[in-house]
Length: 332
Ligand code: SF4
Image (tube, rainbow, N blue to C red; front, side, top):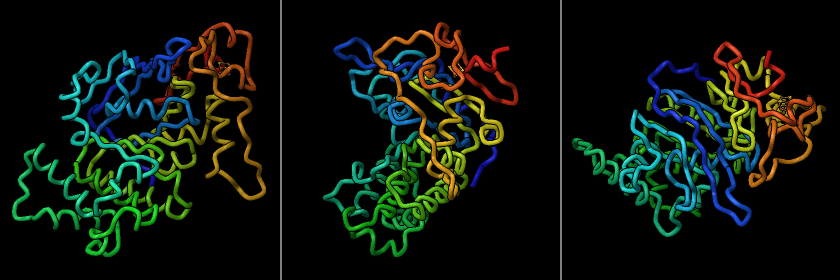
């Protein structure tokens, strides 16, 4: 399923992107000066534990954060700056240029409308926004086509069913169909397979990989499981406590894991489980995002911690071969 890194133009570019939320104890930094690019046709996995900021970053990109969120830095999409853009203009990007699917499709599907009607609405919105000329194709024909694309059996029957009548896998396929119906250039998928059984998870990953190529979309795949990330992406960006700690082509991460946190994720990934070998947890827990940390944010959990790690914050270093790492172990 792995894809080679696309050499297309930069589609989305984040520079020093920071997201903060107000709290009783002051500003909580969920995303901390993140910089990365997504190229046209590229599949990137954003990996980290729960609470590391990866979902907040995905929502910041598509503009789904609450109004209380303070976003600073730069986020450009096809050259247009999105930070500070008013909601009206942002809506032009959300759902047409970019689309997002979530872990639990029931939170996005409307329980009181039939699948066919919800998909038809998505198609009609796209046709209106993009001024699509569908030729002689009816909306219903397009609905059936998209359900077929996501490999739903008997789409003619499924269009008349309500979301609760479908299995978890079929609901997630429906959500993917609704996203495809928008013809986005960038799809953001936030833990889309986490709630599924292993077999369905593999099928959905394979489907997403296939459709990304077929529709020439870029994909930002958010997951806590490094093994799953490696199955779908060409590049892996590891995020810890809101900061990027490693950014590398997928092969590099698995053949020579650099950052101690990435090593911990590797050892604890459920998909990396091999019979007889223990899955090891990373000791300790993520620091409180309201707390100001001097030094490396991972130092309290790191087995390689040195004096300087406690006193000085490491920079994201260029490690060569298109790899970046934030760790003093690689600072010569
Ligand atoms: Fe560990 Fe130090 Fe590297 Fe941080 S900078 S990951 S504490 S070795």
